[in-house]
Image (cartoon, rainbow, N blue to C red):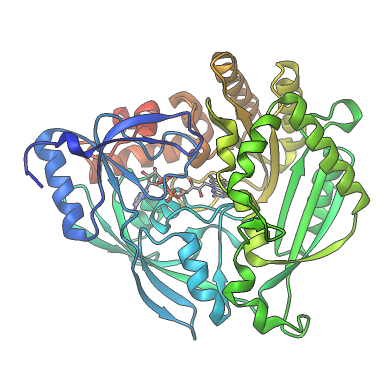
Length: 479
Ligand SMILES: Cc1cc2nc3c(=O)[nH]c(=O)nc-3n(C[C@H](O)[C@H](O)[C@H](O)COP(=O)(O)OP(=O)(O)OC[C@H]3O[C@@H](n4cnc5c(N)ncnc54)[C@H](O)[C@@H]3O)c2cc1C
């Protein structure tokens, strides 16, 4: 690597998962800490900033850094240590959730927290502090992190632990790559006796009953997720389905040993052993419009009603990574891509706010194509906490040349409803939030801490992304 010039050969176009945010960046993919330190030195010498990227599956602009350096950690994929007696694993930052569960499941362990897709890396997942369908009862990935190593912008390597370095530990985790580069993490996995979960699906005729179902079943469930038909109106507004899943014990599963095998967990890549799933998105493209999705939602709701109360056995992988079932499904949203709006709302205001959001989207002619509701716990101790004791609503919108401006305005108007309801946002999904909205939702104390830590650990604003510039993180001042 030439120490003072950026080679045009490093220029690559990268995008956010939603395919809306795109950038040309100088991409470097080191495999060692020394390699990371060399990239930081190069950035200082060439006056460029450094953005971090793991799997690149944040929806918006969190892992792109236009015309600057993008440090891609996805080649740091070694599993450094695994203890099948304690369930403690030590991994490099580029190990993905997929690598992780596939490595441990045969020993009767599963990651304590997994998000809705398996393609994120541990580094990127810690930087956003991801949650799963068990958030309200299990917390976030950061809660199962025993220690991690990180490289500071000045090149120093530090080890962080929750009790010994609490400030850095709780800020680098959740800190969206603004303070340090995570290179290694030691995580606690959870014991499982069978590779299967029992899922009970319940249909809800409207939003009120959907939220009530989630609350009614949360104390007896290990995982919980709600699906909303965002096209339904009037008395049916917010209708949908709640899936509640529980781990099977060894005694409950006569095939426990087989179900812990990879062959059982791996999601098949064909339908009925014939049709490759990888081509499905091509057909899905023709249905990805208001007409097609309205009918798909209707059909899903009707099918759910017929199956109300049914119990199904699913593998852990199938239950946790439903969205990975159709490979490349996001391509159905091309050429414009998709925007997701995800907000977290307190219990008391959630129902009214969700009602207003669904109605607003319908009035503007942009009902969400996918609506997902989850249950979450109260505020946590991580710096960029997004959780509140209540619900989150995630909605996906198809972007086209014609609707781009109108959708942008819709996002801002949805944000206003969220802020009025005392809600919060999650940067992993964000592509539009503006600085004032972040400050209003995060609160003054956390914004002050964010500014102070940025000044202390990255005084020259070496670590930046398109997201951080949009949110003006480099301009934050301390009082
Ligand atoms: C279909 C789908 C479903 C999802 N479901 C969920 C869900 O249920 N729950 C949930 O919480 N999230 C969910 N997500 C979001 C996803 O889990 C997060 O965006 C996660 O951060 C992705 O990991 P990544 O490795 O791709 O990170 P990237 O997107 O590459 O990066 C994320 C952030 O981390 C920073 N970063 C990357 N690597 C490092 C590092 N080594 N050190 C420090 N900072 C770093 C980047 O600068 C960026 O700000 C979902 C995403 C998709 C596409």
